[in-house]
Length: 305
Image 1 (spheres, rainbow, N blue to C red):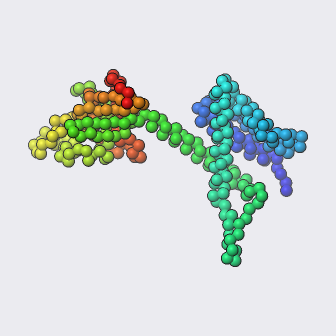
Image 2: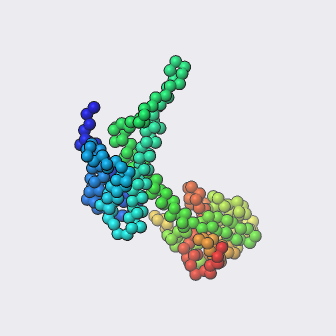
Image 3: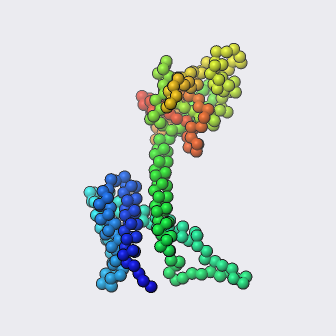
């Protein structure tokens, strides 16, 4: 069997470059391309050691450990031991994640069992089923991009959940509990009272409001018309706002008695606030059903929850 060492080395160089690049992306580090290339060059040279009898000691786990430290130092540098150690562990995590994904995808498409003359037969070799180079060339970039997207999604989700709070809105004898997102981009305020306006997803919480109240809230023009009176009608407010590409929009809001916010082990009670009623879903995945105004978290006395 002919072994093309230059092809094997080139493939390993490309794969090592992508592994180091993904590690740098997850570390949020701006790593220069020449440092990535140098690190990938050192990492890919390990393949050459396997074909040199005098360098067989490099297959020792301890030597592999030292070699990986060299790769990380050359690529990402050394400033502090803690940051270097985290970088080194993340490099191993990325390698095992991509490698595990490749092997998992390989065995997912394999058929190791056949039925022959009514008998079940399995096939296996002592060293496992070899992975074809074509599968590696196609599968590695796919697993790389998939892993990067999943990690980015998990990071975004973590950021969102770090900004979530538990909210209780009290209106007379009705208490509405919701999970809220603290949105720094929400700067909506009532122009008359200056009260901040939070947004409530009515597609989820509409059942907490009287039907007559909902009807008036959906039809702004009926505010001044005579008809069935509602006990919360005096709490209705109309708040003008401006959206991207839309001017002179109006939002129906309700004046609550108070809003209790529980976040990061503390509780805030806000009384000067309006609750804007959105009859459109504000979170497709229902991670939160309310959007808080950032002003609601400042200037209020907090208590330990």
